[in-house]
Image 1 (cartoon, rainbow, N blue to C red):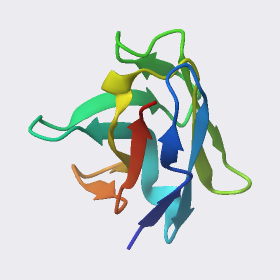
Image 2 (cartoon, rainbow, N blue to C red):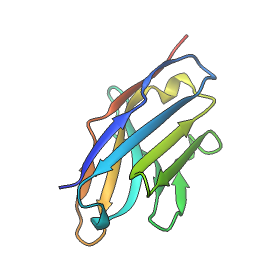
Image 3 (cartoon, helix red, strand yellow):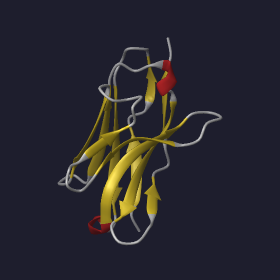
Length: 117
Protein backbone atom coordinates (compact mmCIF):
# COMPACT_ATOMS: atom_id res chain seq x y z
CA UNK A 1 0.00 0.00 0.00
CA UNK A 2 1.40 3.37 -1.04
CA UNK A 3 1.44 5.92 1.78
CA UNK A 4 1.73 9.69 1.38
CA UNK A 5 2.59 12.11 4.18
CA UNK A 6 2.46 15.85 3.58
CA UNK A 7 4.32 18.50 5.54
CA UNK A 8 5.13 22.18 5.30
CA UNK A 9 1.77 23.88 5.62
CA UNK A 10 1.17 26.88 7.84
CA UNK A 11 0.24 30.53 8.04
CA UNK A 12 1.81 33.02 5.65
CA UNK A 13 1.11 36.62 4.71
CA UNK A 14 -0.12 37.58 1.24
CA UNK A 15 2.80 37.77 -1.15
CA UNK A 16 4.78 35.30 0.88
CA UNK A 17 6.11 31.85 0.03
CA UNK A 18 5.64 28.35 1.37
CA UNK A 19 7.00 24.97 0.39
CA UNK A 20 5.10 21.70 0.76
CA UNK A 21 6.61 18.23 0.79
CA UNK A 22 5.05 14.80 0.35
CA UNK A 23 7.00 11.76 1.47
CA UNK A 24 6.10 8.58 -0.39
CA UNK A 25 6.52 5.08 0.99
CA UNK A 26 5.42 1.61 -0.07
CA UNK A 27 5.49 0.11 -3.58
CA UNK A 28 6.51 3.29 -5.35
CA UNK A 29 7.23 1.36 -8.54
CA UNK A 30 3.46 1.23 -9.01
CA UNK A 31 3.13 5.02 -9.15
CA UNK A 32 2.88 7.05 -12.33
CA UNK A 33 1.73 10.66 -12.07
CA UNK A 34 1.76 12.58 -8.82
CA UNK A 35 0.13 15.85 -7.98
CA UNK A 36 -1.19 18.37 -5.52
CA UNK A 37 -4.85 19.12 -4.97
CA UNK A 38 -6.51 21.59 -2.65
CA UNK A 39 -9.88 22.05 -1.04
CA UNK A 40 -11.12 25.32 0.39
CA UNK A 41 -14.06 25.46 2.83
CA UNK A 42 -17.33 24.95 1.02
CA UNK A 43 -15.63 24.16 -2.28
CA UNK A 44 -14.80 21.03 -4.22
CA UNK A 45 -11.32 19.60 -4.26
CA UNK A 46 -9.41 20.94 -7.26
CA UNK A 47 -6.21 20.07 -9.06
CA UNK A 48 -3.33 22.45 -8.41
CA UNK A 49 -0.44 20.80 -10.24
CA UNK A 50 0.58 17.42 -11.60
CA UNK A 51 3.88 15.88 -12.67
CA UNK A 52 4.30 12.63 -14.57
CA UNK A 53 7.01 10.04 -14.05
CA UNK A 54 8.64 11.49 -17.16
CA UNK A 55 8.73 14.98 -15.67
CA UNK A 56 5.93 16.64 -17.63
CA UNK A 57 4.12 19.28 -15.58
CA UNK A 58 0.68 20.84 -15.71
CA UNK A 59 -0.76 23.59 -13.54
CA UNK A 60 -4.13 25.07 -12.80
CA UNK A 61 -4.48 28.47 -14.47
CA UNK A 62 -4.88 30.11 -11.07
CA UNK A 63 -1.37 29.09 -9.97
CA UNK A 64 0.62 29.25 -13.20
CA UNK A 65 3.75 31.35 -12.79
CA UNK A 66 3.50 31.24 -8.99
CA UNK A 67 3.68 27.55 -8.05
CA UNK A 68 6.26 24.94 -9.06
CA UNK A 69 5.83 21.20 -8.70
CA UNK A 70 8.82 18.88 -8.59
CA UNK A 71 9.70 15.37 -7.55
CA UNK A 72 12.92 13.81 -6.26
CA UNK A 73 12.73 10.12 -7.16
CA UNK A 74 15.88 9.34 -5.17
CA UNK A 75 14.25 10.71 -2.02
CA UNK A 76 10.74 9.49 -2.88
CA UNK A 77 9.45 12.99 -2.28
CA UNK A 78 7.09 15.33 -4.09
CA UNK A 79 7.34 19.09 -3.61
CA UNK A 80 5.23 22.18 -4.23
CA UNK A 81 6.92 25.56 -4.08
CA UNK A 82 4.34 28.31 -3.69
CA UNK A 83 5.30 31.93 -4.27
CA UNK A 84 3.31 35.18 -4.36
CA UNK A 85 0.61 33.58 -2.27
CA UNK A 86 -2.87 35.06 -2.25
CA UNK A 87 -5.72 34.77 0.22
CA UNK A 88 -7.59 32.62 -2.30
CA UNK A 89 -4.81 30.03 -2.05
CA UNK A 90 -6.02 29.25 1.47
CA UNK A 91 -7.05 25.60 1.55
CA UNK A 92 -6.12 22.14 2.71
CA UNK A 93 -3.52 20.81 0.29
CA UNK A 94 -3.45 17.10 -0.53
CA UNK A 95 -0.76 15.01 -2.12
CA UNK A 96 -1.99 12.52 -4.72
CA UNK A 97 -0.41 9.58 -6.52
CA UNK A 98 -1.92 7.56 -9.33
CA UNK A 99 -1.34 3.87 -9.87
CA UNK A 100 0.41 3.20 -13.13
CA UNK A 101 -1.81 0.27 -14.18
CA UNK A 102 -5.19 0.30 -12.44
CA UNK A 103 -7.38 3.35 -11.71
CA UNK A 104 -6.37 3.77 -8.08
CA UNK A 105 -5.67 7.09 -6.38
CA UNK A 106 -3.63 7.39 -3.21
CA UNK A 107 -4.08 10.41 -0.95
CA UNK A 108 -2.22 12.01 1.90
CA UNK A 109 -3.94 13.31 5.02
CA UNK A 110 -3.70 16.94 3.90
CA UNK A 111 -1.90 19.99 5.22
CA UNK A 112 -3.48 23.36 5.93
CA UNK A 113 -2.21 26.45 4.12
CA UNK A 114 -3.58 29.77 5.32
CA UNK A 115 -2.75 33.03 3.58
CA UNK A 116 -3.74 35.97 5.75
CA UNK A 117 -2.40 39.22 7.10
